[in-house]
Amino acid sequence: MGWDPVPVTLVHVAVVDVSEELKSLSSTMGSIEAVLDLDRMRADIAVLEEQAAAPSLWDDPDAAQKITSKLSHLQAELRKTETLRGRIDDVALMFELAADEDDADALAEAESELVSVRKALDEMEVRTLLSGEYDEREALVNIRAEAGGVDASDFAERLQRMYLRWAERHNYSTEVYETSYAEEAGIKSTTFVVKAPYAYGTLSVEQGTHRLVRISPFDNQGRRQTSFAGVEVLPVVEKTDHIDIDETELRVDVYRASGPGGQGVNTTDSAVRLTHIPTGIVVSCQNERSQIQNKASAMNVLQAKLLERRRQEEQAEMDALKGDGGNSWGNQMRSYVLHPYQMVKDLRTEFEVGNPQSVLDGEIDGFLEAGIRWRKQQAK
Image 1: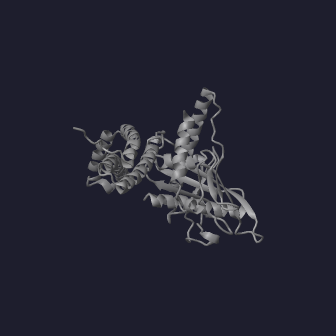
Image 2 (image 1 turned 60 degrees about the vertical axis):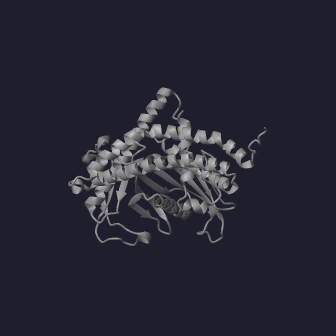
Image 3 (image 1 turned 90 degrees about the horizontal axis):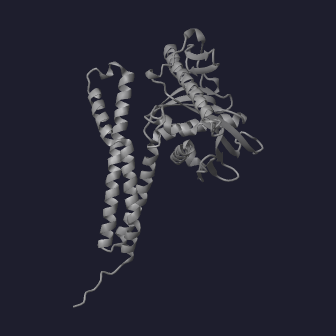
């Protein structure tokens, strides 16, 4: 007695085609889970939960903020990892069901979920590349207008907004320490902190010179203008860093803080400028109403700059020993072109986007991921 073979349909063929990719995704997920060390993460969460439940937690607000922030970050990271593992398992089941029922609509849904899972996995894989000494720190960002006159000042302000909007999209808190406004428009410089674990490791790839090409809104003849702004990213200093500053090596100047166009923002000399005489580093802070608070914030910025200076000196010594001359990235790292065409392009990674407005509105994750992968590749 004969029997009819199971018909091979397009749905079956599609499921067979993705089976190897599903295995690859599961394997990649396993590698990520190993790097993140989920058991250690759960143990760390348990310790932090115990600390967060202590009645005396808020006796030290700064320490409490760090504990609750780190706990929230680890909980979110564990939840994201466990959810993604579940999605990988579920999408395999979705393909099986689509094949069993020979359902083209179910297949389309499974394929759409596969694309989404693949993107989420790529993003999580980038997180595992942040293994530098200071990568898990919060980030101190300094932006300054460079060549290009009023257009450069306007560009510096747009970059500040871009990073603050990026932080807002990720629910990261920020604090602006100081903003020096330009006379006509925009800003001369600004310093702010992004308070999130791994903010430094993530944003450090943004360091360098950013270039803007556009028809200048400040030129009566409507000519094309090229302007530049510099971005510096530093790790926030912690008590274990031992960055000691001798008060005798500091010059402290106080002045009245001002807002856009020279408008006074308070009526006392509360803004503080610190000059570190041995290195010539100058920092200032005018965010707080109190001169004492502004001096404390300025000291934090100065310590971060001295920490970065020490890190660069140590790196230079290592590079000299390796004989590779420093392996510099080069200074100019990204172009934002608004005219004669629309494009933002990273000059190191070749990553580009055809919608500059979305980038300037804070959609920079693609550039950050490409930069982190590129940096890892350069280190090999």
